[in-house]
Image 1 (spheres, rainbow, N blue to C red):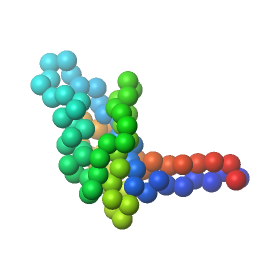
Image 2 (cartoon, rainbow, N blue to C red):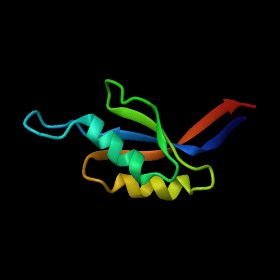
Image 3 (cartoon, rainbow, N blue to C red):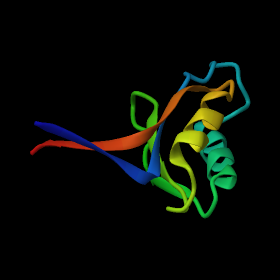
Length: 87
């Protein structure tokens, strides 16, 4: 049986590629997201594929936060981090 658990305070964000002619940097986008997360910050990334993992206050609603982040123009998708394993 496969068990999936939400890592309640972590959110995976996939960034859209930044256009070459943009004045915006990936670091600015990361900082923007960190400021919007309650007691949040960066866990790791973004990696070469544009994915980063962020954390927020464990009491925050990770599903709601991911949905809000997904609405940003520079975010391809955002989703709660899920830990799955065979039971």
